[in-house]
Image (tube, rainbow over all chains, first blue to last red; front, side, top):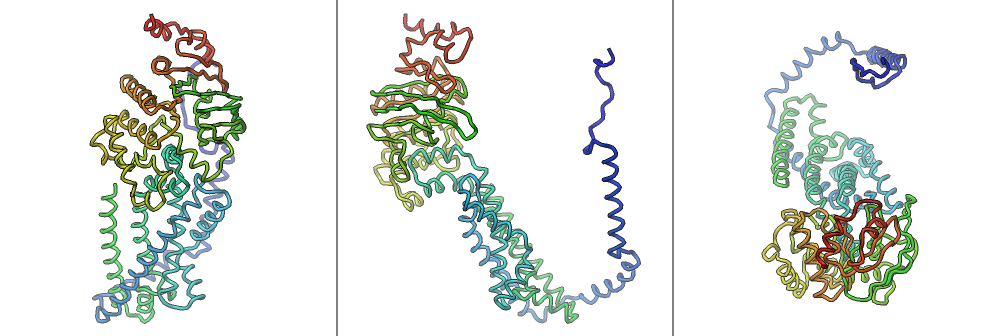
Length: 266
Length: 259
């Protein structure tokens, strides 16, 4: 009787069922965390010592110094241009890349190459790519544009390929059944299904590129980043604040524009 | 018109979907294919226009061998076979007119189709066909704004504007209410007759299939188990196709009508 009776106590199964193994994993995690904190010299005394310096630093930032306004303006404008050019390049090249990287469209060989490119392009942060391009091509906005286009292409190619992989196969089949060739199948069967996502991603990409274009200047790849880095280097904190405010302003403006455009696309 | 010889299909998964199916359609008739889900009906009609690649066997349309065609020749052969789908398969984000004209993609170049520059006679014909199926004035509506019955009418027009020599129809009524289903079946039958072309229609609904067909083909487990006129379909036939069940009620209506 007791074996067949309905249980009255219920407890959710643990994620790791074996209790010994579960406690070993938990203790090992805690032990490592303590070790790592010690190793990295993470101590509050040092934070306390740094506090007055931080206050001093912020005090010296005010008021922001706009006396070198033309330099700031040029830098910001250059960043914006870099972002726009890089975005244009990457959204154009992302179309063939995404078609190649979509498992439902591509052939095995092309798929492997496209996916490999995406993995490489996505595994390095822009600042690392920028260092490489600056070493190869010298200073200036040109290596910066290449950096942004390269990293953005990985991002765009991956997300667009995923959008293509999620399309309704039936619509593609219907276009194939009319006797349309491969290109026309992409045009009528695939493109209409992914177009809103493509446009949305393109605008998002401009957003990302604008942010990235302000930072890669630190390693000499053009844009406002170089000026910001120099200002910090020369202890001109008031100029640095002016540059930071300019960056924040332009990012906010872009954010506003892109959110408006994306809302229209829904 | 259409000759299918020993068509066989085994999917890479090992599923043997079609087993030596042979069918000859030599006049402009409406052929209903009955059969339970998974009997191979969809595979059968997709092997005819090679949306699915048959493993072996031959298909001839008007004497031309379809099996074995490649690239351009295959595209040209597909233009001659209009297909109507279960879930309509319209391009949802495009307009009714773009959907209809997509039936002409096999005839129009890439850039003309990119900029929607279809020949005037195609546009004229599209308007005429839309009017014929009762969709006059809908040409600028987006496909996803239409009802099921309206979408299937667009699907029918898209197939017809190809000037096909045969219509391949896959479960055209499965998502529709009974009345709309009847209207759609009748429309397909009438239009196929008007154009003087045969239509092969996969259909679940036995009554509907019998009512509008000139000929019934029954499929079970990848094989053709019945081929005859609608009046020859008996309870035994349905048992052979679908398995044991009390079919008397499904059949009676037809017998009543014939008396």
